[in-house]
Length: 481
Image: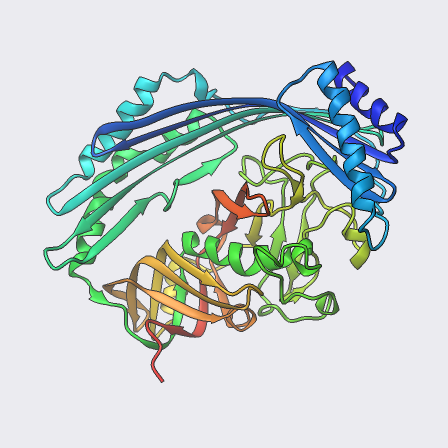
């Protein structure tokens, strides 16, 4: 253990803390954006600081500082123990942590090429060329962005853990907005909406996207949507593409499995969950072929980690196995309440935030169907892809999602393109209707860097492994009585 974290932990124990952990983080970020071939912003940010958690008198305390110095460490320790004692005045019961074997480990990053060694001019040049290629007649806005992160995180605890983890993330994407004289506006994105795709990789991940090669075709699809027919309305069979299914997993499987939501700790901001403890081990979440995993061990996955921010080694668990709900995303404090072991899902957005239960990589395990078989099994239906909008209630039951593009399916074949496709349903009814999942060759782990949760707000980087999947008798389009 280094002298700084040793000082923090010794000081907390001396002041009466029964448990203490310290996270020392040094993080660098870079964001590059280009609009219509012209640079819009290049932002470099660096932060360094430490956060301290303690249990004293059976209650949590947390404090942090960006000043990494011995005198500041002593001050923060005094403050955090005082906060814990104050919290104990309102406690309902003592905090009890699941026992975790201490770890001493050093985890290297997974990047081949450090993206921070690539000149800004090269990054801007690639995005500028791609967005210029998208500016076809009728395209009113072409955007491109890249984002990179490099982090060293040191975790030390009074349990005896000392873990150093290095992490490098890279991501990029482009999008084209087309508009008609009648005011219709359509957007297509590559490889995914929002900030594109992201991974624990280096510059090689961005190069492999081949943004320039896909730029013009992405713009042409946005233009084609202007002339496409509106999404039909009715109950139809639905094939959901991998990108859109990543959102479906995120909102209707990942969030409701977070045990802090189940226990009411997120109710004031993000809501609770319909997955109450009485459903564990018996509730039919989906059809027999639905297997949903929380797996932080997938190489390069944005939601991957070796250890979480409690020093728990990340491990794969089945949230849903054979359609039956089996496991929660948990913490050392919450796991024993429902008879589970911690699985590595506690993370914080930087040194100045307290760890909370977060998704890791939440995945729909692949099936064995080809794309042609998925589509071929539909007589009258819809294929949708690309994330556009989402809405789900605060218990994660009733949802409506909108996709960037859709195609009608008739007689087992893709037919006309449709614009503004939407579908709606109830979480468990939707997953119970799944009767086909694409095979491993269609599987991709999508990196999502904008999952918001907590008060104050924390943004987590998560991921979702998906193949396209087929669902029966789903309400699509605008519902009419």
